[in-house]
Length: 201
Image (cartoon, rainbow, N blue to C red):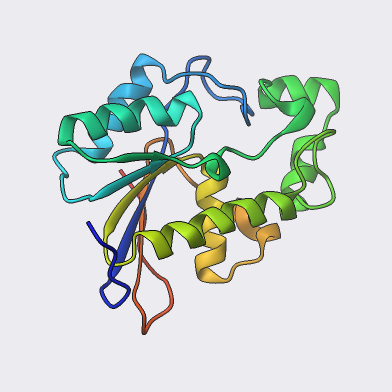
């Protein structure tokens, strides 16, 4: 379907469900969805069939569900490498409890100042925001006037919302993004982005 910049563009942001191994700072560790995660994802989308495009992170916890959904509804699925989760460096694969045993207080310091208190080896927050923003801007231009489902990660969804709502990246961790939660943004040529709802499950 050809894009139409004069019509409203609707973007639904869907975070992946629970991955194998449960809650941890996964970053770019490529774990698949758990059985519970698959159930969460199918429950989140329900019977919705009005998307015209699906765009997904290439990591397994996102793209395997996106492919299944696309096959079910005969929708095109596009992998967007820029929508990979932020790289967490030495925190990747670890739980909060494990990190607190190593260095007490480090997780709290990160959330208080995620720009200057990043994990060792982590992707800089500004670089992460720039790559997600570039992917999102291209998506909006490419699929203008269409309804798009983005299957991605909490960090990616936060970065998209920060861009759309002019929120500083340093404040993006104040946005809670639940597993399999859905948020909706829309825009057209005359208006800037509007957040329609957030965290719906």
